[in-house]
Every structure is written in C-alpha cells, then in structure tokens.
Image (cartoon, rainbow, N blue to C red; front, side, top):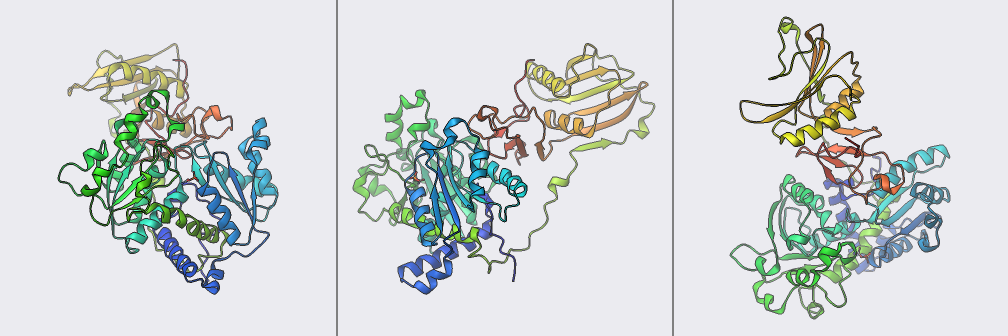
Length: 533
Ligand code: CP
C-alpha cells in the first residue's frame, strides 16, 4: 500500500496542502457530507478515527465560536480525546514561552493541536520546535499543528471550508471561478489565504471591493497576480455595480476587523463600513443566481450582509458555516491517517532552484594585466576588497545609508578605505565600497553580502591585480544569521515576542524576501536588525 502522505502533517498555511491534495480532500468532504445527509452510518464510520485515546487539544488564545466549536464537534465525531487549554488560567500568562507550553502538552499524549493566536506564524514555529522535543523525549509521534487563525496572517481551515462551499455551488468543478472579495481586505486573514487558496481553480477572476484604507495588502495582491489571477480593484460596492464589467455571482464578504485597526482608521469606521455594506437598492443590479458568503461573525449592529437577506436565495453563508464541521472532520481524519491511503501523489519535477548558486565566480584569468580603475575619483587599491554596483539606480542618500549597513553586516567597518557614489553614462547612481588591507571572506560572508547587496560585484585585489571576482545574486533562503529580523511585530520571529525564534526568509518571484513564519514581504534592505549607523 502507498504511504499515507497526509498522516502527521501540520496545516500552518493553506499552501501546506498542494492543489492536488486539496482536490482529493474536497472529494472526501463531499463523500462525508453525502453520507451524513443520507444518515449512512457504515459510510460515516469509514471516516472515523474511533480512538478514545487519540489526543486533540484546542488552544484558543483569541476568541472563537465557529472554528473552536466545529473542531470540538468534529473531534467528538471521531470519538477522540478532546481537551481545551483554559488560556485565562494558564501559566502562559506568567510569561511561559509558547514552545514550553506546547511541548508540555505534547508530553501528555496529544497528537493534534488546534491553535488560534494573535501571533503570526506561531504554528509554523511550533511545528519545527516540536520535532526536537519529540526526539529529546523519545516520544512515539511528533504532534501536528492546525492554524485556526493567526493574527492577520492566515486562516487555512476557513479557507478549506470556503473553497468547499464555492465548489458545491460550482458543481464540484475546478475549472474556473469568478469571485468578489468585499470588505476589510487589509486585516481579514480569510481573504489573505485566498491569494494561494484560489489556485485550486484552473482559471481565477477576483474582484477586490474595499476602500483604500481597507485594501488588500500589496504582497497578497502581488501574489494573486503572480498566481495568474485576473484581478480588478474597486473602492466600494457602489463603484463595483456601476459600469459595464461582468459582476461576480459569488460574493465573499468580510467583517471590518475593528479590533485590529489603529485609531486613525477607527475614526472613519462609519464611512468605511458604508462602502462595503450591501443595500436594498443594489438587489436589482446583481446577476441572477448570486450567492453571498461570509466567514462570520457578522457585527450585530452593523452587519455588512444585512439580516434582512438571511431568508433570501443569496444566503450561502449559513451552509458555509455548517460545512466547517465536515471539512474539519476530514482534516482531523487525514492527519490521523484514517483517510488518505488511497491518495496517489502526482509525479512532480524536482525543484532545483534552491540548489542554484547565487555567488557566481567570474573568470579573471585572461585579465591578469588589466589595470583596474574602479570609478571616477577612486584610486585603485593594491590589496583589499572592492564592492561595486551597490544599489544601482537608487538615490544617492539611500545608497550611502545602505553602504553603511553593508559595512556593518560584513563587519568591514574600518578606519581605512571608504565609500563612493558614482554616476554611470545612463545617469544611474551606484555605490562602491573599498577597503585596503587583508580580508579573508568565508562562504558565509559571501552569502551575507549576496543577501544584503544583491546585484553587487566583489573584487578581491592582491598586488594591484584582481585575484578573484564574484557577482552576487539574491539567495533563495536566508537564515542562521543572528542579525536578521522580521519587521512584523506580530510575527513569532520578531524579537519583541521574546521567543528567540531565528528569522528565516525565502526569496519571492518578484525579488523580495518573505518571512517563513508570517509571510511578510521585505526588501533586501529590510531583513536586518536596526543598527546604529
Ligand atoms: N469564521 C471564524 O473564524 O469564526 P470564529 O471567529 O467564530 O471562529
């Protein structure tokens, strides 16, 4: 029998399940729901873990009704051991670290943790951390972590139930979808998960409807475009319904997340809410067969989907919430290894991109007699290093600031040598750092230089000649350096969280570094801890 690829896996972001795995997952959700509707107990039993000692632990550090209760009921369906951490009376309030708290609970025979927190990337970190703990203590199983919503980052199980509901209304057809995302797209983690989640469909058209203050963050917008989605932005429902473009038949509303808004936006909340709240006079401007969805809760005084719509055919949100339990039953079942044995992974081509060399050594053997002139006004050095082509095209002040950072990152602050800004024939500025002296740069130093100054060249000069020359490109991954830091204060890896989580960044297709924990996009200048220049 093929290995069950789902068993023991965590779901920290929606991309933890491949598109093919999700398609399999939704077929199982459909089978389960049909069995439940038909009260087919024999079929339902095929999905049941049926083990009273199988430990499922809920840790909700932020409020929840649907996610918590649908998981609790899903766990009960499985006849499993269900526990809940009473967070208000937990030692986590005495300053205990997340790692210590979850490791302890792992030791008490728990296999799946369901975690909601304001701290972004927490599950990803716990997934890494628990591996060491499990090994240290010879525990039989490493626990799995399910992200039940982390700050304004992601809510992958909500994404699963949203996708399943869209599919139900699409006749379980994966070929295309046209959906409008309406509401607080800035703070709403359920819409952020859609940047990758909607890749489930072969062809995706997304209409983003939100005032600029609540617009989709740039990195998620970019991701949608990179993923090939056809994206159009509107600032209000009024604007969306005006004009001659095609209006989506699927509208996904989100609640203005007042609890995550700063004072400046809160002051404008009435105006902002109005632009994303459905009105009676919009009814005859939407296509026949339109369905509305909402992750819920709605605000009791100011719902963006008014309650007078509850008993209309537009109501897709109640079935969506009910689907939450079916989807979570299957999620627990695949992680427990109860479902998934019949899944066959498609052949995938090996991704060799991480193997590429981002430090390219240039052959200088034919240039032995060249007299190197580095730039206007810079006297060639006989022995030392010259870093050239720094921040080509940036403003001189920015280049100057960045050269200070490079010197500090490479620890080549020195009383000798200097920094220079030169203007090319094309009018673009670039920076040059030259340091006379003996420098032995290790592979680690070269990687740091590639990460802090991609696009630069490094010349190692000996006895007046260039002995070695390297061109630096952005590394695919940057980690294991003490002076890296994610700039998102809500991220588990931010120093202010006090969890000593080492920062880790992945290069994105658009030339940024994305935090592996919270997904925040950074330029290569931003991934370093602030330092005194
Ligand atoms: N949709 C959702 O996450 O609801 P809860 O906050 O009630 O879990």
